[in-house]
Length: 133
Image: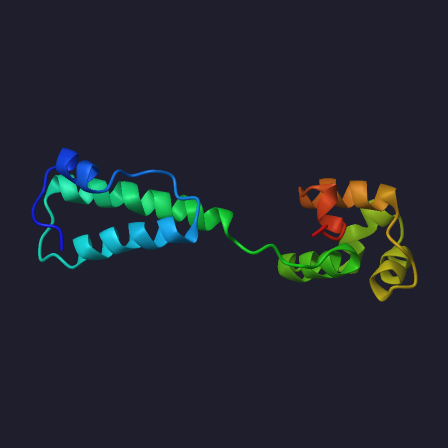
């Protein structure tokens, strides 16, 4: 457990650095836990805790899993998530029957559809293609 320290002492004990691995995350989390175990934190300890929390948050943002869906499955998920109807996509596909045919798998997404969908949903066209591993 860390005894009462000022900010510079805390930095000397455990210098905050961007987290780039699971081991660094665990080490940072141990320091956070030891501070949280204290009865009362002084203002320096609270600021230091805030810095470490920000580093953990930034690392965890980079570790978010990207769903392994693309193409029509991604389109269906976006439609459902945003509460859209097929007719809402007519500006992209020109007719509701084409929307229906694409969603049912009877027609393929074209490059033009993908470009227009990326603009419609404000996402990268790459999201509609399978990720290379």
